[in-house]
Every structure is written in structure tokens, then in C-alpha cells.
Length: 256
Length: 344
Image (cartoon, rainbow over all chains, first blue to last red; front, top):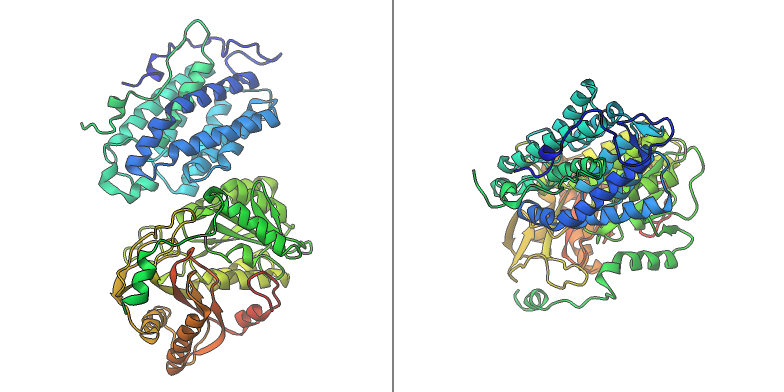
């Protein structure tokens, strides 16, 4: 079923990344190099999955989702090269900038979400609690501006449970990678469940029942992003897989 | 009635295009070359601003939206109207990043008004830009234009009426108020009042075609016209038999009077607007009838525009917009303006 989150071996207290942390960065926090590695894995994941996501969007929307994601990440790469970030917050603000300059509506909404993470802290590292707060802030902004609630078959369906999982993990004093694994699990489950929903917001709402049976590509992208964090922060000797739920699970044409 | 129209519908139209993907940029370069004393084009991110910025301390006014509606919005940039316009691709919203860059470029310390036509993508991208601009301490308020009577919803659920040619009236009056030094609250209130008292209705004789794709977005039989069309080639609300200019004009005006509850003693600004491929000669014929109908109803047309201001590429057809006005709105309409499209 879900190909990643659930298979990530969670070892609370593990080193957050296999990279050197800046002096003073506590273990289990996100440094700028960790953030860049995360963005890099996400970039590769989008490259691999853009066609699939675009196909899902074609069945329920206007089909530009995959192309818009790729265009956004091209801008992200350019921005990162032009203005190399020195903190993890700055790294996610570069991602935000790339997405805000993308056409359509999903791209700019992701831009707002990444901005929430980027503004979670301006120091040399982010704790899980800070990341959880940033995700919650970004998600709240999206809900306020787009008017979408969980159950409307949009990216919000994955954002809300992912944010809640991060907050719960922070409350449980888990480290970053363990928290991300929980959030990725939650996002995957919610993204796959959008398959059975009838869209009430977003482009898919224009086609009504036609979109039932097609999972929301925005929600899947949220899961892909969180998976990417798990992969990037995973010790090198434990390579977990990354990717979207397998096509049969994504259920583009399937039924339950 | 079949002859000339049958040809217009059947023949693919030839277009002046180099590269369909570059049409918007090339047009902006051309407009800047033509009007260097009025506008300046920022190439990336793409937006157009006044060549001579407004004095400090004034509310800044920005609009924008998909291209293909020329002279809207770039043609409305200049003294007494817009401080900046943000053009998207043809019929596609500009990005939040473009809008943000324009907002930061013209913010003048007194807040920024975004005049936005009511389309989901435009509304959201302007709202996102406003959200991010607030990080810089820029206060941004949105004035939504939703005048298209054909899209009035009966359920109250859904995107609401589309924004069309009343945008010109809103931009003019908001721009004049800002130029006169009104504060942000006042400028926004005026803009919302104009939007609330404006309605438009359109009729198409033939759909338009995208640059590089000469097939029209819908086909009309030569003996029919389509009422309630939008400015993006959206289908309308109903087809009727083709008829004389007077009969078609009647069908445009009457629902506006009824929806706005305009009657004897009321005063309006009227715009008889071409949708891209209709001649000024024909528009003047339509406006003649608009004036007669309003006069017979005891309504005074205080000011009028007759021409192509809010187009849908090369759609053949026209729209009529009525805005109920009073002395205050009229004075703002009459205030000096110096843009590519409007100048007095």
C-alpha cells in the first residue's frame, strides 16, 4: 500500500542526519544542510512522479499540475543557486519563492505552505516543535485563503493530519526524523483516502463525480514531500524507498 | 443573414504571431516602446508600472489578470488610474510572485489596493501576494469586481459573478481617489461601492481564438448569437436568433436595468464595449440604442465610453455595462487621467 512512511524504521533519538551538524546544533534537529538534502530528494521525487501526478490532475482537473510542479522546482533550484541559504528557514523560503512564482493555484498555495516552514525559525537549526509550528501556520494560511477544509479533496486533506502528527510527535519528544516518519504516514493515509472523496474545492470540484476514484495530486505531493524528508535525514546505511503509492493503490481507475 | 457570418465562422483566422509562447512578452515590449513616457515594463517578474511614479504617501492601485483583454489592464496604467498592472499568460492569472513584486515596487507608504476581477485563480493569487506583502509591512486590500450579470448564482454557493468591463470604471474611480490623496479605507470603500452598483451583459457573434491556435473556442451557427458570454471564450447562457443591432442592444440593456433596479431619475455611466473584433462603427450603432432605451426609461447617461476596453482576444461581439453614479463618483470619473486607453 503506502510505499514509504510506514516502512521507515523509526529510532527515536537517532542522529537527525548523516551530515555534520553546525556547532551547537542539537541532535535530532534540522540544519541547513539537512534542509538542502530534503529539498534535493523532494526535487528528484517530483521529477520521477510529475507525469503520474499530471495524469491524476488530467482526470480530475486541467492537467497542468505536474508541469507546474516541475516549473516551480526549476525556479527553486535557480533561487538556491543565486542566493545560497545559510539557515534551514532560508532554504524553505527559497522553495516558497519558487512556488509563489508558479502558475495555477496549487503551486502558489504550496508557496504559502513552504513559507510557513521557512518562517518557523531564523536560527541555524529547527527543532521538531518549530517545524510542527511552521507546518501548522502554513496550513492555517492555506485554509484561510483557499477556504478548503479536510474532506474537500485538496492538499489540505494531507496537510492537516500531517501537521497534527508532527505536533503530537513534538509533544512526545521524538526527534525530527521520527516525527517526520509519523507525519509522512499520516499524509499518505490521508492522500490515498482522497480517492473516495467528491471534490468540494479546487479544480476537481468542477467535474463532480468524475473525480471520485482519483486521489488528489496535491495531497499526494504533500506525502511525497514528507517522505523526502524521511529519506534525506535517514542514515546512509538504511535506504528507505520513496515514491507515491503504487498505481493500484492510488486507484486512478480502481474502485473499492 | 447567413452570408458574411458564415464565412467569418468557417474560415480559420490568420494572426500576427511570431511564437505563441512569446506573444504576451512581445506585446509588452511593443507597448513600452510605444509609450515610454507612460509605462515601464519590468521583464522578470513581469509587471508594468507608471513611468513617472506617484508622489509619496499616496495609496497605490494595482490590477492584473490574464492577457487577451487588451487594452485592459496595461492600458489603464498611468496618472490618475493604475500604478501597476500585472499581466498573466493569455487567459491565465498572473503568479502570486509577479503580483508581489509589483506590490513591493509601487507601495508608497499609504497601502495598496488590488483591483481583482472575480475569477478563482486571480482572487487566490492576489490574496497570496497580499499575504506575503504584509511581511514587509505593506497593507493590501482587495476590491473585487463581479459585474457579469450572466453569472448571477441563484444558490449563493459557488464562485459568484465574473468580473468584466466594470473593471474600467472601478479602476478609474479608485485611481482618481488615490490620486486625490484619499486614505486606504476611503479608496477601498469607493471601489467596492462602484463594483456593487455595476452590472454588465455581453453578446457574441463569433468566439475568439488563442494566438497560434486559430480555432475559435466555440462555434456559432451563422443564424445565432450567444448571450451571456464571458471574456475568456466561456459559453454563454443562451443562444438566440441573430437580429438587428437594436433588438440585440435591447436584450443587453433591459436585464441590467432590472437587476440594478435603475429607473426614472437615476444616473449612470454606460460603457458599450467591443469584445475584440467588432468595429467602432457597429459599437456606435449599439450605443445609439442603449442611449434611446435609457432615455425612454428616464435614466440619464452622465458619461459614456464606446470602444474596445475589455476584450476577449478577437471575439466578435459587445457588452454593455451600467454603473449607477452620484456627484461624488462622477467627479472622480471626470478627474484627470493619462493612460494608454483613457486620457482626459
